Length: 348
Image (cartoon, rainbow, N blue to C red; front, side):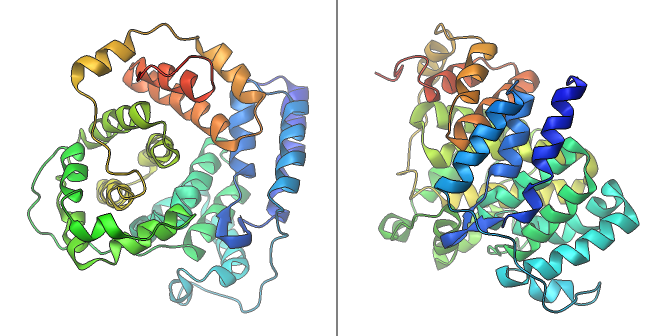
C-alpha cells in the first residue's frame, strides 16, 4: 500500500500520460505510461519517476497525441483495425464504451475481438491494457483498447488443424526448420519482424502447431525464462514480460479468449526466431546450475532498476518478480540480476 503522499504524486504524473502519443517516430512504442506504474510498484520514488519521465520524453522525442477526425461507433470501429491514424477516433469510442460498461464488462466485450491482434505494437498495447487492469483505471483501459485496435497486427489465423505438440519449446524448434526464415531481412522494430515472418507461406501453419491446455501458460513461462536467461536478448525479454501481462488479463477472459491470447502470442514469438538468431535452449543441468547461483534479492534488483533510464530494466524487474511469485523459479531473479549488471555472465 502506497503512502498517501506518494500515491498522490504518482497519480499526478500518470495524469499527464494521455497527452502523449502511444507511439513516437517510426512507430516505436511509448513505454512511459506503463513503466512509470512498474517503477512505482518496485518502490521508485516520485522524484525517480519524474526524473525517468523527463529524460524519456526528451530522449525519445515523444509526440503529442493526435486529434480525432471522424467519429466511430459499435458498427464501424472494426473497420479501422490496424489504422494507426485513427487512434484518436478509437480513443473517443472506447472512452465512451468503458464509461458505459465499466472496466470488466468492457474488457469481456472487446477482448475477444482484439485477442487475435495481440501482437499489436509488439505486445505494447497488451502491456498498456495489463497495467490499466493493475491500476483499475477506466481512462487507462480506454486508451489501451484504442491503442490495441489502432495497431492491431493480423497474423495468419488458426484453422483448427490438429496440433503437433503441447510443448511451446518444440514449436520454436520446428520454426528453425523453415528455411526462408533464415534469410529474412531484419528491421529495427519487433512488430515488423513478426509481420514479415508471418507473411511467409511456410509460416502459415505455425499457429495451429501448439495444443492449448490448462497448463500452457505455465509451460510458456518456463520456456520464456530459460530463453531469456540463455540469451539476455531484447526480444526474449518481451516473452517474459508479455506472459506476465497476459496473466493479468486472464481472470477477465473466457476460456476461448485466453486460448486465443496464448496461441497468437506464441505464434508471434515464433515469428521472432530469426531476430533471436534461432537459439537452442540450454540443457537441464545448465539451467540447474544457473538457478543455484548466488544473486541479489529483489530489493537490490529493484533499486538498480529504479536508478536506470532503460525502460526495459524497470519493466523486466517488476514482471520477473511477479512471475517468480507464481512459479517460484529462482531463474527469474538470476536473469534479472544479470540484466541489471548485478552479477556477471553466468553462461561462460
